[in-house]
Image 1 (cartoon, rainbow, N blue to C red):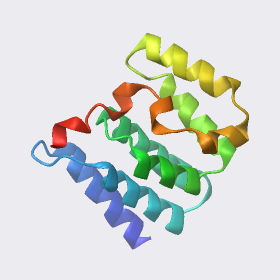
Image 2 (image 1 turned 120 degrees about the vertical axis):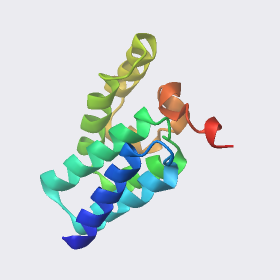
Image 3 (image 1 turned 30 degrees about the vertical axis):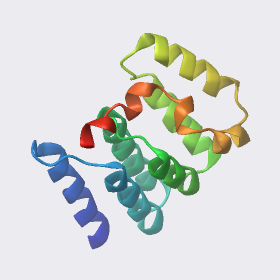
Length: 129
């Protein structure tokens, strides 16, 4: 779809541009486009790529987490978190976060808060002020 292509190209341009910084709403709106206009593997793949960029940029926050919880099934959410915890920069944070997620029931994922995840995922939020 044209809207998905435009959203994806825009996100890629932001990622390539050094003078434009994404914020949590950049990712929130991209995930919303994916949720409303794609499905299945394509939806999961696009949201995963955006989520990965989001945590690399340190922009993981309440709007992003809320949109992810509303857009993905508990199984998809757990799979995505597991995939990204494995790539987390800090081994100590990775270990703590991964153990917490592995112990949770799938239904508990929807009650988790941003503060339950590695701090580095939200580390860029302070830089925007």
